Image 1 (cartoon, rainbow over the protein chains, first blue to last red):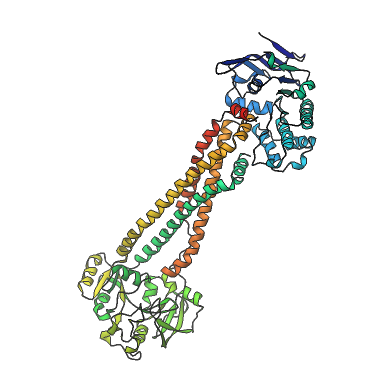
Image 2 (image 1 turned 90 degrees about the vertical axis):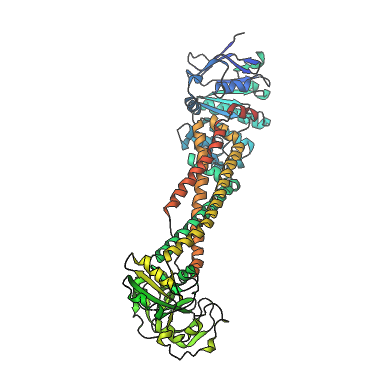
Length: 222
Length: 416
């Protein structure tokens, strides 16, 4: 079965995938074709083992697909050399994971600065502005290890945005959070990505956020 | 930023990084300490050994004769009759023959009976204050003696019999300071120099003892001699004669003539010191090998430390890769950690080595009468610094490769 999900009316799409498959031993997972507009928001849901994270990793250039191709910003990311793909990822893509990991030896500010350093565009005012938005400016110079899990997740959202990427991929960003924090994180992600005109793709099995996204793909259907 | 990251990664793991740095530092310290001690010892020994071609003294140990009469750190073999070495003063191959007589000291500074040539010819010394001695019991003192004992022209003191362990004071024969020598950085700075006549006057019966009893009180029968009596010309004794040649042929003839005489022995400082250093060298080499072993251990420790650190940091390394860090950047950041451990270890090792040398110098100055110093540097230290840093970086290659090979997607899948 070949299926295509087209989100948005623009001709020019930020993400276009074509017949992506991934193989784990004898098992092959086929993914639907996705066409997503600039600034769009998409929720990919599915139960465990449906390949949500694999799809996200393939879209983000972290995992090679068995077959098919992915165009992000009209660039076939797997045709790029490793070095160029790393740079492309640093500049164009932001990631948010269920468990936020940071460079433990650095402060909050230095972690964010290091993210900018990796994409060669240090912009302290952008960091300050984002920290203010999430009310964490007072923790700017704190050690990342002293933050609560909720604070770390908010900082990880900022980290995903500091380079003004075209897309944010969020992998189960709310699964470990209580209802209140879950709503806060989703609101933060959707609002900040909208304000920055950044496309947002979330993969999750968290049913609490299902109703917040009109554009959805359910991998259980495949 | 990458430097900051590597540095922060080192200092936030003070125990493991510190252990590697301390091991490196210890080995560097031992190497530097051995190197500086040997360098200064060799330089001082060779420098002084080359000032004198032959030491003519009483039969016994040649090395002891050289150590006592040239370096002033050992006891004399005994005395020799002045008239037996008389031929040396007129021999055509001899440029200078300077007799010296030892036996007394003042507050651990040796009193040398000799003539002013001892100061001017051997040590190129000069008077900074006052004059050379003219009369018996007049002395000139080395610069360090003056500074340390706060002595000046016109001051008097009584010598003690013996060199390090005094048996009694010669209170009847007070010495009077008539001159202070300019500092030379040589052993002369530590000596008190007087005329031979002074020594003969203080020890008129040394011919009966055969040698000044320098070691113990038991050997010295203080009451058996009369200090007031005069020494007859035939009984005049000295401890040694320091000879310099004026012809290369002297090297082949003078020692032979001297050694043929029953009571005399010739010792060539250059040969004796070379033999002494050859004896010390294997011990120093053992220390070098030991420090190289610690060095190897510290490199192993760097590898283990960084590997463990990689294990702890695999999620953050994966996040760095996700954030766009190239494998090259990750590789460089870990090599930089090796660089910092190497830098910390080598710099602290060099500082420690020089500091301990500085402390040891105080003891060595007293023991060997030479100015050892912690502020002496060797170009090899720079090589050591670079090699250590290089090796620290090399040790980081293996952990860096482990980080380089990290599968980001698999790592994050296990904990996202």
